[in-house]
Length: 609
Image 1 (cartoon, rainbow, N blue to C red):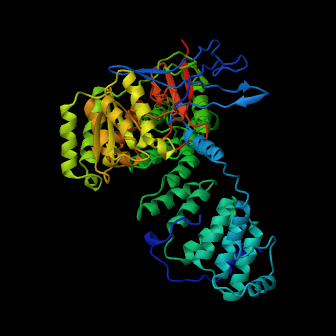
Image 2 (cartoon, helix red, strand yellow):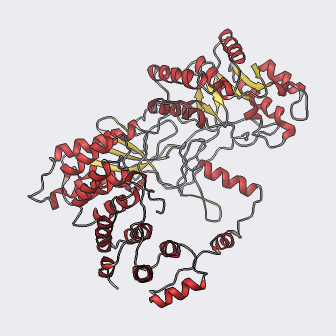
Image 3 (tube, one colour):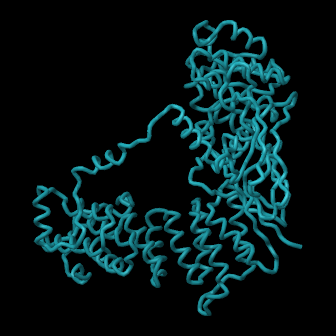
């Protein structure tokens, strides 16, 4: 039942959409501080770090006072009681995995049971779908199966999809094609596309060659999904150069994807054609696309082997030029705040260590709360913005967020001007508090004003100039908003109350940025919508950097008689950085990191002298 039968089959020339219209690969706290001591069994965070310093509680200096932070202990494999491991829980709201851990903790506290019905639900969703056979069928058996399910329309497409989803063997899918060709005399474009998808996924590249000949000879054009699949498959074989021609055909209609480029770049590197690989990489960047990490991985890995497998007939790039191009990748990661995954980071480490004449040494490590590398002692870059960066951010936020097209969906021109006048008449604030947001950290709706008062009192106790933003309904006495509490808040802090329909965030951002680079703000809102309003990528990255260095989040629950604590603000920037004789690369070692979180682990690369 080989592919020769398919070559003889007449292909259904159904009306097809033009190449650029075809479907794509759609198939395809308040908490009493308790000092924590690192137990002697805790292993060190770096193999060369023989005397790690104890961590003390974090403090950040404000312009007029000190903000008290929660204790931070970043243990790695520490043992706590009865042999149980105590996991590392960084206290920064932006630390990788924090969002997932918080959600799981809240789920446990709420007593939500494990979802035991999920497998049953998945099974019920699959009910009514065609059940694929577990072996190749004869034409008669396929006909019997089709009749048993009521001769549905598009039986062939539905069954091929089911075969793909179930991970069926190639021979079973081939037997379906044989049945369809014998019964109808035709094989439709969509059926072949699903068959192609199965072949590419399972690595049947020789079969892909046959499908390519059939589809190119029978249809006027190929859609994006088919083109991408052919590029992927051909790039894995000795016929990889044909994928370059496919890429040129794709470029006549639309911009190829980073995956299309990456497949061919990987093939070129594996076959020693570094000139072609880097030419395609440059084209990818010029098109404004961001490379996939496995593309970078191939570039780093192939360089390590280029001397072993270099072929005389292939023009190769010099070792020095290769080195410069790979360092450009690290600068690209820095400029675009990209964190390599652990597998890519391992390739980067190995490449550096392969430069024997330069004697680089790589180590896996973490940073101290003060931003010092635990391996080499280098001070990491500060999280604080420079004067120029701050001015760029301020202008961007004022123009696109505060004065943007959508701002008056959140307030009125009169209210915004009244607030600007209010801010200008006040001295610069040290802290701006999102009153409603902070109050709602307490789930007890009868203690909202008490919670807000506790936070404001803590900040006022530290000698800080505080602005509280609220809404007018908070001034009306109720179960949630005690009049005495609200009066005390207005005595301890400057207050501005907006209309009840207004949003607080634009006011909070305006007051914080207007007050200066020292001013912090208290809110658990991660401001993702406002960051998205910034059209310039560099400004968005500055916003995120400023946010990580200025946002205070209440740590834990606020309870009467206990001090208010805030989650820690790291003093250093989590970004790829170099000092010439060293590189520090923050990398992803977990799949739990949300897009607004930053990694906690680093690759330290130092040059020996």
